[in-house]
Length: 185
Length: 218
Image 1 (cartoon, rainbow over the protein chains, first blue to last red):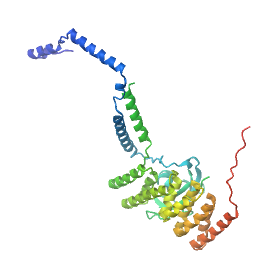
Image 2 (image 1 turned 180 degrees about the vertical axis):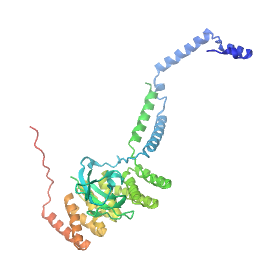
Image 3 (image 1 turned 60 degrees about the vertical axis):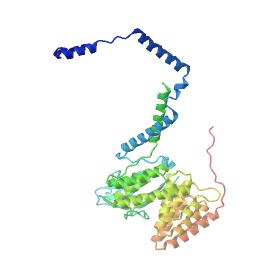
């Protein structure tokens, strides 16, 4: 909708002038069409001229840039995620044949007991244990691939090693854990 | 689709493949920003040379759960990264996570890298990676029972040389533990037990491994 009536007379004339389509001479249009047709014919006749409009070096540089950018984005996205993924570089071929391993701890007065270790990123909420029917023992069963694992129990918020298992050597943090060895098949 | 579009699609796809293959880990939120940054540098360096980074993040998480201070956690993670690198150097081309971490544990327990290399690459057939991992785990656990790294390395070397099975390493470990609980000195327990295992293995003539093949389908 036009609302030119409210404009001052001088400005309204200027607007009207600008609205008028400029004259385009026919020879100009013919020239443009001729030039476009010539360029198109050259492209069709020699397609290799345009094949590497993006040169290999430029493509590689762009690839590296995208990789770096993508890596940064992935890292930024993954960092706050609560899940720790395993490494695809070191192949854990034994992950296919996990063996069920039962953990138990006698703690009749405990209110909550969880299992922590190398197998769950030492996450104290990942593997809660269940009180047995007798009420004295806390138990859980998880699948583990062959290997050596260090682990401990979190009993009402306090770390405790498994009294029925070997103690881990050279603990770096001054709170010994227990050691579990899962045999290969 | 023009070549230009195809080129751009290719480089974008390549970047997606590269980034999706990267190992990602999570560090505990309790860590101070500067500790976190230092740990991320250690993890990035490990990732660059193809080492597994999950054990490094696990070690940091273990430290946090055990109430260790940031400096101690940083030292522990750096030490583990160095040991994993040394383990990779000892083992050569293996990518088995279990044997890599077992070798790193043995190094951490004080075993000599020269001796571990000798055990991993004996003349003739190299041991199965699973058996090697079990042997190095046994070595580490023997050291934890106050047996010297040299004696423990010699003991597992005797069994590896005789092609002991995983089970025999596990039995040795539990027998020594049982003897120590019974009051026997750690190295005396190992000497006694290793002698009986060696006698048993030497009594069995070594031959080619027999694999029972299932009958062909009818």
